[in-house]
Length: 370
Image 1 (cartoon, rainbow, N blue to C red):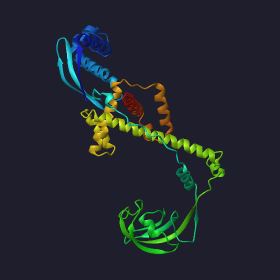
Image 2 (cartoon, helix red, strand yellow):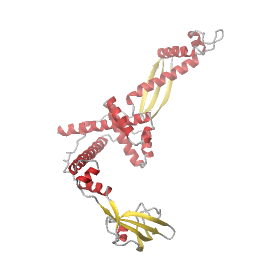
Image 3 (cartoon, helix red, strand yellow):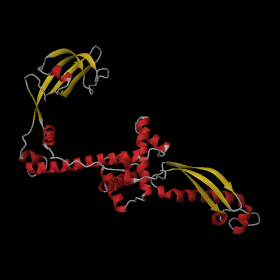
Image 4 (cartoon, rainbow, N blue to C red):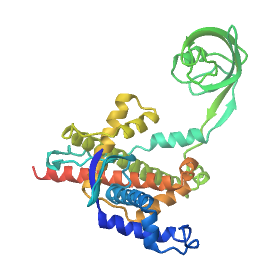
């Protein structure tokens, strides 16, 4: 929150009154003159009180907009006017604006820990995931084992769920099912899966009767060139190369996020008394955070917003266009429907990322100077 003092000189009020009187001239009705024919000075004389009041209001709004423009898009709430004083020479007032505070931060105190080198990327898990996605299920007459998909009827004392399917893993429920064959029935007491559609059993311990309807084995496709071609690649090597490249990018992004979080926390440690907007805290609460989490999240956002303002960070038109294009290509219909608010949201993301990157660079410079 910023408390800003603003003064409007009388000459500017008079000038605005002239402008406003000209706007009112066509509709003004003054005794002795036809509608719209009264002189400007006569309109000012007859309607001075109303003209002055509206002119002052206009100038106040213009001054506030002009004053808080440098904080855009970091304006969290509507400004509040207070202590309006009029004299013969000017009109003075204060505006409490809901924007990031001015900060004094010593970037030299922020040190970045030495980055760990990224090891060799293992794509085996990703290949296995692709195999599982493209696998086929084949009915078997043997007992169910780990990795099989089983279809069962579940009956409790007051509910029944037909044809529930799940993959046998290492959880306690799976262990009770493993070893059963199609057609077999068993009463059991165990901890049930969280996604089971019986509210009082989901993720909890309970009793139920289970009947095995069918056991299916997951048949994985072979990892060869044919498998890769089915996924749109020329060969298995090309598929592996593509996966490795994607995983490398993912690792780099994760590492980048980790470094940003580390540096932001260190910046917060040296600015413990930063003033946080109540509006920003409420926004975080609406996103489902607890009061404590909302305050911490709002503190971090306030600091990076304040840094963006302090350092005069800006957005190039090309950057905004690229973000908006990605937004248009995404399936986030809620953001698309936001219109102008979506643009403001994108601007916030760009500038906050730039502020974090600015902090990281300052931290690296600090580390190199040691």
